[in-house]
Image (cartoon, rainbow, N blue to C red):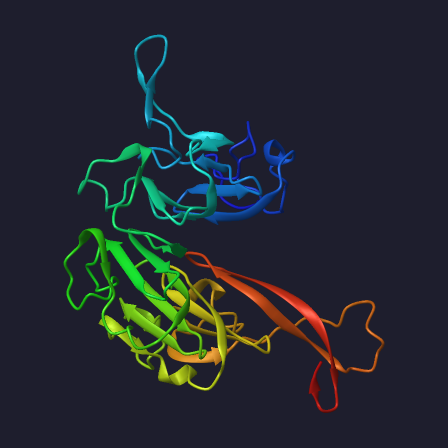
Length: 333
């Protein structure tokens, strides 16, 4: 991990200084981590045995610990977690997801559990002990935004709950939901992936079609403008025909990945998060160049290119895993 660390977010005890180069989280060295997630200022991880871990900011109980404790003199201290520790210890976890100030996990049985501050602070009391989200069975995948949640079921249906001030739940209104409800307008398509940003959501069909809804400011929905919010899912026509296989949402931008390894980004462009090499804000999905030299083992023929395999969007930055793929004259092999 690397980056901002004032709240113990990097898990590198005892230091809390910002780090600008990657450093291993030593306390997790003896387990095999298979998936991890970063929230507002806390982190979650799960190992191959289904054990979940949490660390970082904990003022709302999002790490699974009581947010405050008293010292020997009786003073109340904020209880951040600077070293990864077990959370949701009674659950066998398959996936973890982190929101602004809350945590969500999907168990191997297909159930969803949550804890922390699931609403904007002050709207609802936080909890540090996991509680099961009622009404959800056979969940395949979860996605969490700042204060809203998505659950994709094995039957392809999408259920949502949480904050909804910009229509990010896709229910046709801006009323929050404390219990899961189905998203409107997606019953005729088969969904295979979902993603949640700060205040917007996307879904991907088995035909490679992308749907977006929620806050549209800065063009993060990809509909060609920079302000239109949508309270129900609408297909992103500007990505039609691109055969998308994965979508990711950041705080104010989005990225879509194609089957042949190209990336399209759109939304707010400051801080370089769109990858175009210049400050640009756009609602038009544009291809992100992968400007890297060929690998050292390249045969020099030039028959190859860098292809993206996975993308992840943060609040103001983007990561991608890429690989070099050899090509023939008739196409990619």
